[in-house]
Amino acid sequence: MLTKDQSSRCMLIKIRHRDSFRLTIPIALFVFDEIIEALRDILEVIEDVISFKEGFYIGNAVGLIQEIFSELRRHKGFRLVEVEIEDFYVLIELK
Amino acid sequence: MENEKMKILQMIQEGKLTSAEGLELLNALQESEKQETNQQVNRTRDNSKDRFLRVRVSGDGTGIKKADVNIPLSLLKVATKFVNVGMGMIPKEARVQMEEKGIDLEKIDFDELLMLIDQGLSDGKLVDVDVTDPDQGRILVEVYVD
Image 1 (cartoon, rainbow over the protein chains, first blue to last red):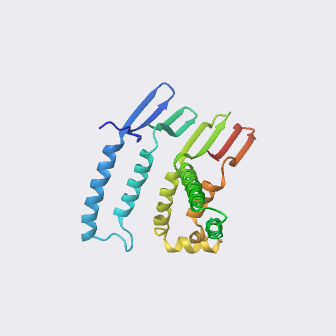
Image 2: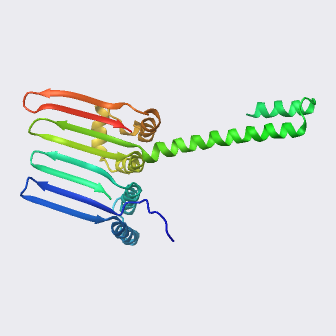
Image 3: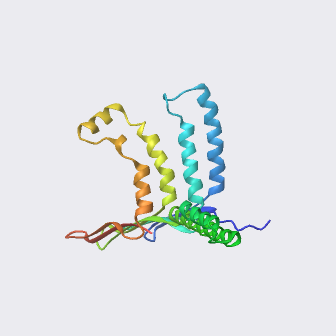
């Protein structure tokens, strides 16, 4: 089935210090999504046994992180953050 | 819309319109109502999906040379849920101290704030600062929605 996928697949984090240091970190968003989902499942089991703080569930916080990433993925091909301070350059973009 | 429909039905009853003409008018009315609703839906969809909150900082000096942040408005809406969760994590003592200084976090309606940003600004800047610092040089800060 050929459907045009409008979601972002990868987040690129680029860090550069003048010409001495360059780092590019690609994050596969769908893998990250799966990891968060698994973490949420584990936390649900743990929270059945241990309650961290009354009225607060870490699983819910992780769920919100997952929602934010899902929302980010809907937008394709934009620069989230681009900062240049003195000799440092940081770029976070979605592809 | 309801008034117009009643008028058409009245005119049919009084014999000023035939039933065929009345039906044609009612259909045309229904079409224009549907178009209006679709336009409203599209406007809201465009508003929330494609619009970004953009923060631009640029400077001539030795500090920040450039800082660009682009945040989709739809992401901000999700992020406000974080705020609501986060509010509950603030210690009671901190809350009391803030309240003594006149800051009541519970009164801030982030959802409404976001709605105002989303619907109220078709263009225009939220923040537009242009300063010249003797050490840092010229610094430009712009925050806007587009």
